[in-house]
Amino acid sequence: GENVEQHPSTLSVQEGDSAVIKCTYSDSASNYFPWYKQELGKRPQLIIDIRSNVGEKKDQRIAVTLNKTAKHFSLHITETQPEDSAVYFCAAIYNSGGYQKVTFGTGTKLQVIP
Amino acid sequence: NAGVTQTPKFQVLKTGQSMTLQCAQDMNHEYMSWYRQDPGMGLRLIHYSVGAGITDQGEVPNGYNVSRSTTEDFPLRLLSAAPSQTSVYFCASSKTGEGYTFGSGTRLTVV
Image 1 (cartoon, each protein chain N blue to C red):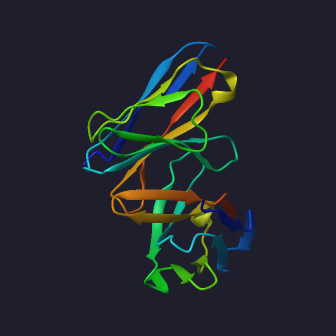
Image 2: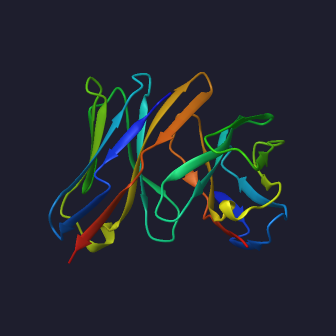
């Protein structure tokens, strides 16, 4: 089955710096890669996603890159702000013909220091 | 759209009691799932469903049952609560091949 490794498990950055979180997956059939942000005591929320036919996607200060050959994808947050502090989860999803398999990474706790 | 609605938000059970956590979505999503999240930990899949009448086990199914009689509803039943089931439970739904929408969670304590 699919295995998703997420690094680092914790990350502290100064406000205004960039943060990068990386996930590696094992199943080359995975074809959709969302990222979720979970603030303390809240539900996870989808912040950005990328499909296997795309190499990069941006949305304001966040971006995701995908390297299918190396089977890894990364979340990039630029100009970090204190409100970016949260736990971030990546996921690798295989879907075909109505069947779907979702595998989450173990999470990265990001702390943005003012 | 209300999204994914979970009830109750908080629950305290005694060991051995049973209960049902409710989950409903109004987005016509085919895929629904239940996760548990222990303090400081990630998301572990309990059960999932790819459509009405179809359910399957996830990573940690023991002690839990599910059913999916309609597209909208996906209740999770705890058969005989144990302290090890103390956790936050999230229901999530999606269109196949899309990202999840999560419910607000149920914080369960078993004493």
